[in-house]
Image 1 (cartoon, rainbow, N blue to C red):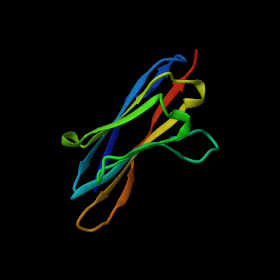
Image 2 (cartoon, helix red, strand yellow):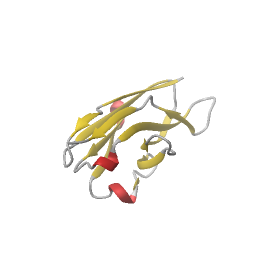
Image 3 (spheres, helix red, strand yellow):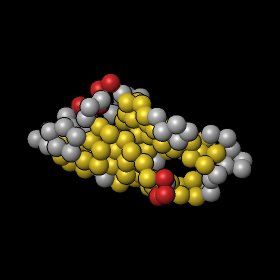
Amino acid sequence: QVNLVESGGGLVQPGGSLRLSCEASGSFDSIDSMGWYHQTPGSQRELVAETDTSDSSTNYADSVKGRFTISRDNAKNTVYLQMNNLQPEDSGVYYCRVVVTTRWEFRSPYWGQGTQVTVSS
């Protein structure tokens, strides 16, 4: 069982900043990757940013490059998403996704409950 607790969403004006956090807990042997996805009503969940444990590589959606930064604290099993210069199109629900390996599962994905981000003046 893997639990993900997200925090940090809210209402912000255009040009503002927010920092999302997602802490993983439970029984797992390793965290293989951690990332954030964005979803708006009627649309599919899309990758915003992710980081791989094996080589610390990061991957960003083109729309957020230069504005968002993903980072992680391995000691706390926590991934962060620093979002700067937020725009109305960044509004939506942000989901944390963590891929873990346990004694029973290899590279299985788990999702957080989602946190709402609203960018509006």
